Figure 1 (cartoon, one colour):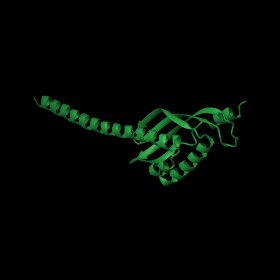
Figure 2 (spheres, one colour):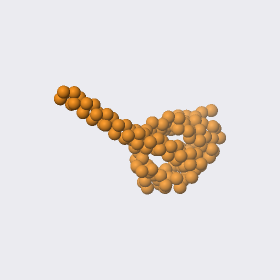
Figure 3 (tube, rainbow, N blue to C red):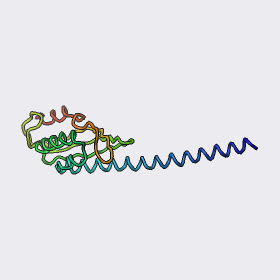
Figure 4 (cartoon, one colour):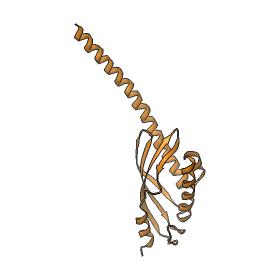
Length: 155
């Protein structure tokens, strides 16, 4: 009889643990989805529309300054810049994105004078979110600059 009661208690404890854990998974999942949506919003407003106030709103100050400068630089070179995140993966506070950029080269960029060529290049970001703010990330350095330069310099 004691083993039977112990088995029932063990099953009950296991079910309680599973229900508590699944609640945490649901909360984590909601935060991950919110972070992915926020990344897409930032891409649309900052890079695609050129609203540099977005950088100040969503990046910690050290990254905000860099993102504002880079956005101004790249949008001057590619005024019709369009970045689309085609793969998003979130785990806890980290969101990884693979993106594709397109634009027409109308201003000097990476030492290359305007060519009026339409180009496409790819890259990725790994951004860490804390309470709706990007606190850590690598974005500018993880894109195919060489592939872009080759397209710009091709005949």
